[in-house]
Structure formats: C-alpha cells, structure tokens
Amino acid sequence: MAQVLEFKLPDLGEGLTEAEIVRWLVQVGDVVAVDQPVVEVETAKAMVEVPCPYGGVVTARFGEEGAELPVGAPLLTVAVGEGAEGHRPAADPGTDGGAARAGEQPGAGERRSEGSGNVLVGYGTSEAPARRRRVRPQGRASGATAGSGTAGAGTAGSGTAGAGSSGAGVPGRANGRVRVAEPVDGPVPVISPLVRRLARENDLDLRELTGSGPDGLILRADVEYALRAAAAQGGRAAREAGPHPDGTVREQALAATAGATATGATGSAGAAVPPGDVRIPLKGVRGAVADKLARSRREIPDATCWVDADATELMRARAAMNAASGPKISLVALLARICTAALARFPELNSTVDTQAREIVRFDHVHLGFAAQTDRGLVVPVVRDAHARDAEALTSEFARLTEAARAGRLTPGELTGGTFTLNNYGVFGVDGSTPIVNHPEAAMLGVGRIVPKPWVHEGELAVRQVVQLSLTFDHRVCDGGTAGGFLRYVADCVEQPAVLLRTL
Image 1 (cartoon, rainbow, N blue to C red):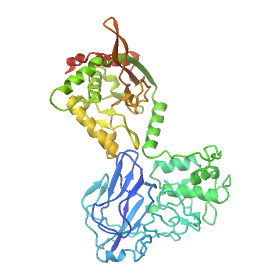
Image 2: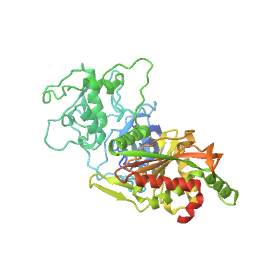
Image 3: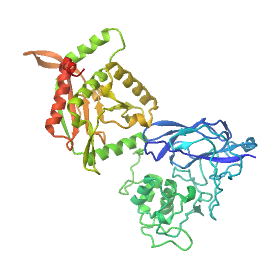
Image 4: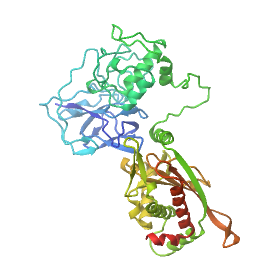
C-alpha cells in the first residue's frame, strides 16, 4: 500500500529562514528517485537545488515559482511504496489525482522508504521518520491543489489568494476568516523572526492566530492572510479587545498597512502609486544586501581616507610575470597580496567589534572578501586564508569564485566569514568611491580605475598610470593614524612593488 510522505523545505544553513522558489524541476505525477533535485530555490546567499529524500510519485506541489517559503513549510508530497503508481493523476496534471493530504504522515508501524543520508544542513534521509498521525482540529482542512502549487485558496508561503476564493480548505482558516485560539500566557508558536517582525510592524497579536504549520506553527502565510482579511472586510481602523465569540479576529488598526501588503497599491504612508510606477520587492540577494548595508551604516562609525598612487611599476611587474612561463597573474590577485601584507603590519583593521562583550576581536587569519557584480546583484565571495596564498593561488581562487558567482553556484559558506574586503570598483570605469564597510568587518579597501594621467615623476611631468585608493574603516577599532599608515603602505607597494619583498 502506498504511503504519502510530505517533504518540507529543509534548513539551508547559515541562519537562513526562508527561500524563494525559482523553478520547479518536477511536475505532479512525475516519478522521482531518492536525492533527485525537485526544485531550485534562491536564498539571500545562493541558488540551491533541493533534493527530495523520498523516491516515488509526486502527488502535490506547494508554492508557485516566485513564491517565498519559510523553512519547515511543505514543498511537495510523494507517494512511496507499493501502489504508488496509482497516485498518478488520471487525466489533467493540474489536479491532485485524489492522492495527497498535506501534512499526513505514515503511522509508526507502516512501511517506510529508504533514504541516502544527510542531503542538506539539518536534514537527514537515512529513512523516512516515524511519526504519530496528527489529528487535525475540527474545521482545519488539508486539501492541496496539486500541480498548481496552491493550498486551498492561498499559495502556501506566498501570501497570495485566488480571485473569489473564500479561504475554505486552508489550514487554520474557515469560511474565509482567520481562526483564532484563546489567548494564552505561554510562548507563541512562531519560529521565523520575519513572521514576528511582520506581525509587529502591523500591530497584529500573534497569540490570537492559529497557525497552519506543523503543530500549530504560525507561518508567514498566516499573518499575510490575516492582513488581507482585514483589508477585505472593510478596513476597520480599530479592533475590539479580545477574540470574538464566533472564533474570528476583529481587525485592529492594521487595515491601512494590510492593503499595501495585499495589493502593493499604496506606499508606506498610504499614498496611491501613480500609474506607470513600478514596485520592486526587496528580497533575495537584493534584500540581503540592503539589510546588510543599512545595518553597517546604523552600527559602524565609519570614516574614509584616500590617496592617489602611481601604478605604473605595478603594471610593469605584472606584465613581466605574465611574460614568463606559468599561469597568468591577475591584477586583483596582486592587490590582494598587497592587502594581506598590509594587514600583517596593521592587524587592527583585520578585526570586528563584539558589541555584546564590548570587545575588539582581532583575527589571526585573513579571509579576504571581494565584491563581485552578477546578474543576481552584488555578492561578496570570500577567499579563505588569503594570507597563506601566493599570487598564482590567489588568481586561481578569484577566478573560481567569480565563475561560481556569475553562475549562481556559490554556497553559503563561500559567501560568509570574511574578515576584510577588497572592492575593485575601477571595473565600472570610475575613479573613486567611499565604500560602505561590509558588516561585521572593520575595513574595506577600494580601488578605482587605472588610467593615464599627468604625474610628476622624478622631478619631471610625465604621463603615468594613476589609481585612486580609498580605505573605509570602523573608527572604533583604530584611529586615523593606523588607517592612514595602512593606506600609505598599500600605496607604496603599488608604486614600488619591490616593497613587498620585505614580507615574502
């Protein structure tokens, strides 16, 4: 007898709490093997193909492409074991084939499929876990629209509802209204900090909601559904204290913001968006970059110093290296080698500030981040132990990480843990910039374009290859003398590469 197993979005590591569905790799009715990738998702750090730990027939999918799902939300259901072929849809692949019920798990004594071991962080597939069958409270349905990626009237995790839907069939919702629980003094069943923030920003009491997740877990979709319901039922400006006797929520002073959440037609102050204007969600990589830059400016008292340097000799040295036999050396690799040598002399800039302990943490290694522009936005891959690599090894690692960044294959581990960042914005054809420190690091070196300019060389005016260098640093870790000394040493190495011989 076939069993229907539910596969949930696993923990993707590095503290990530949600992911966006980019592309489904399977359809309802497809036969999948153990560990076969079934969906491609995008997190704030990387693109990931998610493998399914079960082998069988796909009976339902949850979430349209472009929808965001929290970790732990259902991704799909799979019929496994004997009779699984009977769970294929009889005709239209857009129907669920009468097979799956979201969230249903096999009994402890039933047959379980074999798995393959750990696939993603925190998710093992040695075998399907034995779980007690969960008895659903009265009024909570479990029907899932297979193939379309929707659950009942709303897209799971996406916060969108079908036109004209009443909400029937959505767990935790009845007759188009949000079911509530009696307010209790205990902990609120919420895991995601994003859910808490969304409720807090819209003045929504989470204790009055019944979650549609496992064991009553309140999901982002539940909060967004409550906001849409508030807007749809008249946009009242205030809510009476306490739950209504019929078990529905009387809307609070959240109707104005609910309208913006549901339709995107109003601004933060409630102003109508003029025709032709476009709203672009701050999510994925762009959202992560925005949050990190804003946090950097809030927390780090940064300052910037800069200097022009004659890079003619550096360019000649690189040309000489590449004229010899062996792999070619990139300019960014030489700049990285200069950075690591400068950090050895000025270790204050290879550090971070522990605000809780009120301590400066100085690192004994250099994990060098470098800014890379991709089609998905700005990312900062990290070269591990850059201080221990020579120019050839640095060139190879920069090339590997850059290629992975452009292809969207960087792992969360390759995008985190940096201690200092090198930003070569000269590739954009600009001379200078005041970089924002890559939080929680303490400094960033910016390099402009190298261009011919008039320059006084050996007492005479000449045309030289000139570059502007800038250093943005956390003023808590050092004073201007240290920052200036670091930048001057970098400039000296650019102007006279032989200075590096002292540290080789």
